[in-house]
Length: 131
Length: 134
Image (tube, rainbow over all chains, first blue to last red; front, side):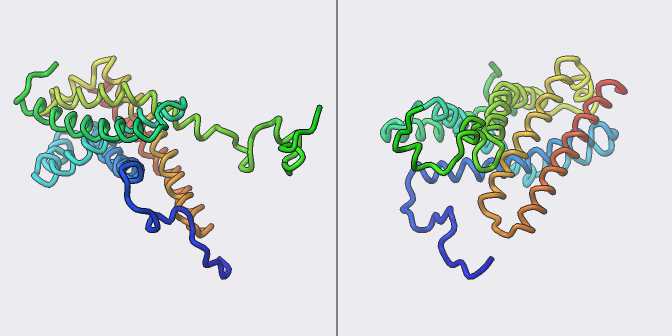
């Protein structure tokens, strides 16, 4: 690039962090995280197609404490990206741009995604009955 | 046609405006594809998470029995294809936003495009193999 020293978009560091901007970058970050989750899903399905030993190896990786931590992060990323994605679809239909509504829907997204993540894991381990 | 101030100031040709494809000549195709895959992924993701919850603790045979069911196999393939398509579209935007070197940008875009297609094809074949070959 020729001697171009102008700031390149997006130059986040000049802005004060706000709920709107934090949730926006979190949407992008969780999206990138979920791309890695997609790779793990492809590996898991391939291991099941390959045979019992390969499947057992994949299961062992995911059942380790580190594997579960990663899966927990993936679960939260999916719920957050999904909830905030619904918020995005609202904006696409020109709904929810007013600042108070923007804040309220943002708080709802965070509360909903945390709750759904915890609820899913409690259900998976039988602490809460499935619906 | 009466020229409004807006139109006299625009450098865009009338043909260009009618086509409505903008400077990238792609129009809203990328934007629309991202939304369509997102809407498809809403029910598919919820179904997938619910399935994983139900499958927790299952062994190889139990998983094969589950994935071998007609509806589960079809939903799995739809989920995988929609997800890798959506991932490709999203990662493309991230790369276009943050990678400013043309060579790196082009390389990464190709890497992501080919990679998502390869993984989607592998995952679909895995589901087919599990459900058809047992």
